[in-house]
Length: 279
Figure 1 (spheres, rainbow, N blue to C red):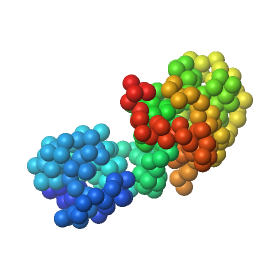
Figure 2 (figure 1 turned 135 degrees about the horizontal axis):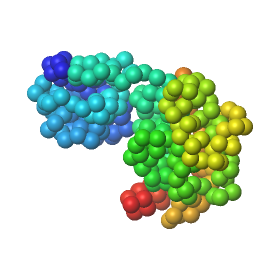
Figure 3 (figure 1 turned 60 degrees about the vertical axis):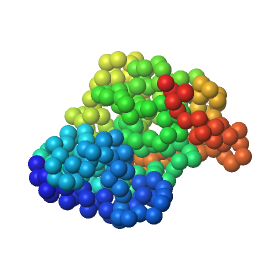
Figure 4 (figure 1 turned 90 degrees about the vertical axis):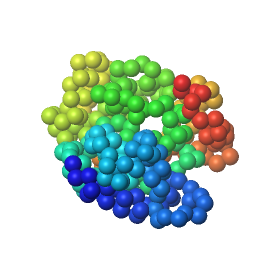
């Protein structure tokens, strides 16, 4: 671990950012350029004291999980993220088509979306980051670990995953999940995480096995959804997907038509938040 190089790198990246770059308000007049240390600490979930010690070159070695959070908070590119890992004494994560480091371009768009549900997904349907409204509707999907990080895996192994969709839409959602996984599997191969998911699901879900044998391949760019919320009921939303150039991640944005009942329900959820509904 090179503490001084790490301290300099963190400070320079922090000073290059502005509050609006990370979805924060400009607020009162600032005495220093860039983000405040407290703001970076808040974005990463660490204490302000811990982050301050890192920038002063006297902190302990950050864990890989903490470095991942820092890379996301500071909107680092993949090259910058790898450099951060190296100067911190860690091997950089292996780059694959299912790299879970959120693409900075998608993160910047997500930061500006606070009035409509939005989330960034990997091509294995793993929720990499989601905004407050998405959590209010779907729950906190970033908390899952292992195979359950994939929405495809949860769809076929956890009945509760389907509660947010009307029963009439379950078959369509099942086909879409399998077709999307088939696409990822074709790109990364049987020895990849996609292959691991496929093998696990073939062993656990007859429904998945039947759909997998159809060899359907598709990636949805737009959709119309009816979602079920335990407090506000049905919410009718349009869904649009914005993909990275390599198709490995997508920003999913759900919007309601103006002046509709669905728009009113989203406005209500925005005020009330997710704590009451998903606790």
